Length: 523
Image (cartoon, rainbow, N blue to C red; front, side, top):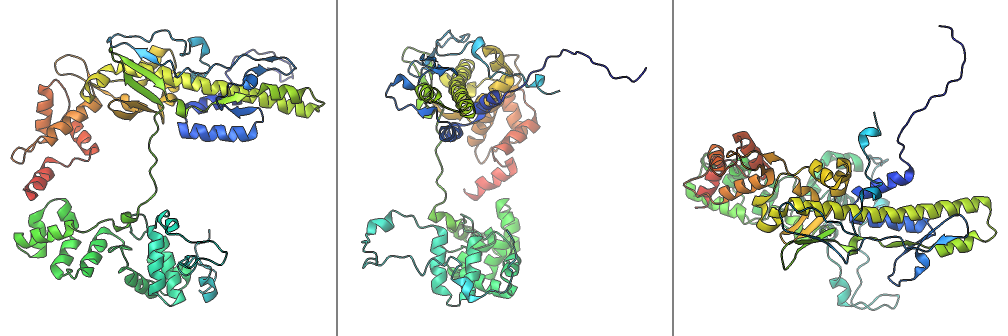
């Protein structure tokens, strides 16, 4: 075949994700907090986006074109005041509702298969001039009872409103204990390595190399700091933490030292092995265990830690008085943004340059797409949540034992969407129900066949049954995994012994031997 240049026409089809569509798909899998942060960023960048203050002003509604004409029809919003009602019938289907999207209004449902075939070492020796910049906040910054030089008055309410952290508490003791500035600088580095529980994280050799000082000096400072309050702080492991507290109580005898060196035997409830290692009788060993139980394994937690943010549900499920369930979105988590098309008309009609008009047009298009994407996100969440309630109605009525096996495909086929869309919607979303707050992915569990030929059981309900059986066992009749298999088979659950062991370990439940030792030790 001759190699000659030629022109050819070829026709093909491909699916391309525009930046707007990528943004809409990304919004699906974000949590309510992440969506709020994303909308705040868009409000700062886009001049045509405004927050809905509830005033009802129609100037922020509509979708204006590039010209002077504008459409003042409001952009549809999900009606959270008219929640979706679900009847309690087992074969219930989602009724037609004006607040739910149709198959024509689902641009976010995409089939993904069609898209893709600081320097750690110091530069020199420690100098006293560096100590003044080392953050030794204990010497200054504490207001006195007589007021300050700027004329401001000090009140006790100012100190009561600020929580003392573990680091501040240790720095105060450090400044009092060590007059030498070099030792204080070493102490500051050691305090920086303390975690919330009060344990020292890191190697002492690294601190010595960073400060260019002898390793023995760092060890000497650490030993003196280990008498700080709270007792047991600055320990490198649990055994050292308990040993420090016992030393302060003057209870660290040779038998107790051996006891702390064999904490692994205590965790296994091997009391005979522990008694032989410590060379004590059973009565002395019992007293030693009681002494250890009275100590604090995490002394740093007494000063609190980072505030845990509560989970804010995206969907509310409420039981109706006449039967059935009501599903509605949490309006507090829905960002309410509007497009200010009037402002666009005002500045577009002025003598703007071509580049400015292009920027205005792109900003308006981006604002309209963001509002529609947020609306579509809310509609999709409501539609998926409603179908979950329909599929898992026995759970809401009777409890976790009646949780049905469910996968993403079942929900996707019921609402005529792709599985990837359902997966994104259920990520980082929570549902508030009369039985508690659950992540949407909680309702998707694998199926375990029934031994009696009936309906399959969900893995979550089987785990609940295993935990219920173990909680009800007595000291004289501790259930082995084989016995649990027999009991579950009698109740209609066909399950293997290794599956029971896997579920038990996932729930942090020890084996039957360890449970028997644990129960006997507390009798």
